[in-house]
Image 1 (cartoon, helix red, strand yellow):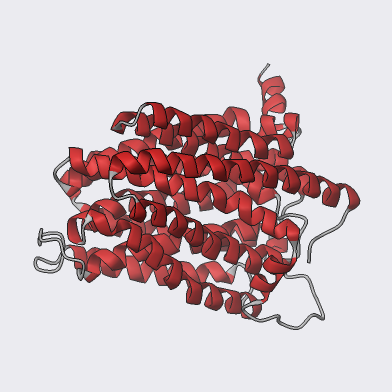
Image 2: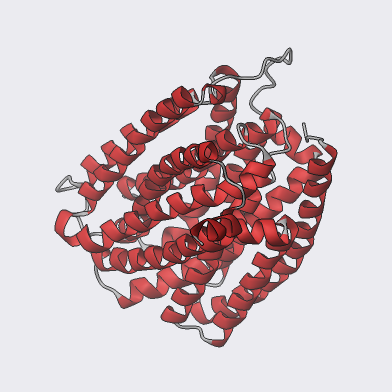
Length: 433
């Protein structure tokens, strides 16, 4: 009976594939666990040091900060073996977040100073550091996985990776929810830094177990430079389609997310209480994603196909937007965000990552870096600009929903194109390069 259920949910996943995806799952668990811990406290720290009205500007600033980081990342792709990228990038973020943890504990410039000011650098450094970490390291992980995985195996095994990641995404907010007041936010920052330090160690173990993940395919092609990813993105309609799949949701999510956090800050007085509310949201969203990843992701992708799943998600988001328009309250937004975040992590994200498998190394690492980093920040900046225009919350909830529904219409068309093109590439044994 158990074997029948396993095959129904995951297909014919071999023992070796199970171990491989399990190891990758542990890596993403550390990345996502640390990111969600930091993400949960990010807005609370920023609002209590800089001020909540500056959140849209912080998101827009992250857009510009990320550009030179993507260029540097693309240059490293040409010069460094793919697994060593983890050693360098995660090592830098470990140092950065350890420094922020110590600064937050400082009695004058840290959280003990309760005066909000737009020039509080610790708030800006915290926000921008976490935003860029989420864009670069998560993109690096999926680029690494796509470069060592076939489409057939991905359809079966990506659900295991997502499942492990969701355990981390629940553990991070749970730690904040239960220990924010007891340990304090600086200590939680330090814990996240240690989790990031674990990532290179796990990658080193993985490439030892699976040496082909270390080896680079020999090629006479010369290094293409840091802007090659952007050139590929702008010249390939398929990649522009993936950009749409990856970013259109972020515009809508940013609008809804700001509404929820604005109302949460109005409802709760201290940074710790806001952090606890946001951690509850994180646990709920990621709990839903975990359940769906374990029993639904692989089944839906294999049973209904990638195109169906890619279109199903924007349809669900449209329903959520209409729900928020009808019930513009904090806990209605909480339920809405839990629903779309959970489906985003467990269904849309693995489908999006599978789209990269029939592509070249430059696409997987460089173009993907621009899509997830520059594209993701652009989308959030666009959503933040809507938030900045409609400063009255009642107006934002109405007009933001109208904007969101228009975006969803475009999104559905893009999803249809990308899904069908991917099937043609896989069936024909072709790649985008």
